[in-house]
Length: 135
Image 1 (tube, helix red, strand yellow):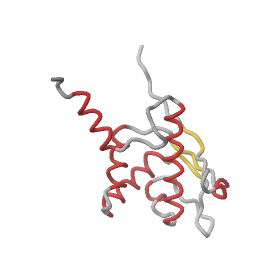
Image 2 (image 1 turned 180 degrees about the vertical axis):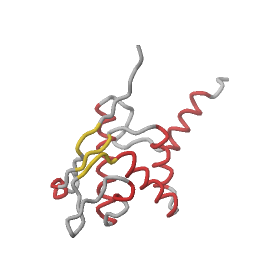
Image 3 (image 1 turned 90 degrees about the horizontal axis):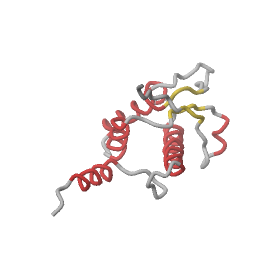
Image 4 (image 1 turned 135 degrees about the vertical axis):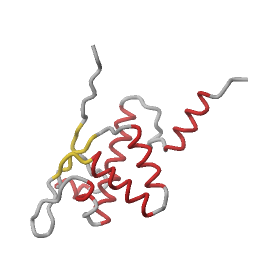
């Protein structure tokens, strides 16, 4: 028997900005480790090119669906291109809500979180410490 991965999709909740809950955003609650690292590195880099790549990953790998339209009523696709078409503040609100929701899901599953997710640097450090030779 094999173990089959299943998509874990849920609606995004905007706890910090409840007025945005009229927007129905479905997101993948979990991402691959590769995507997690690329998001962490890209968003914390401070470099526009790296941050843009992280937004592409978010749009293509985390957004599943939404009901967002432009000011003319035309549907904006739930992908990297559509995500990057959002106004800056709305894009930040979506990413922030997903980060908070992902962190709280990890806490509910007993992950060792203190209210925030581990950064890529913290995960790498933890992995290096656990594989370091004991003296």
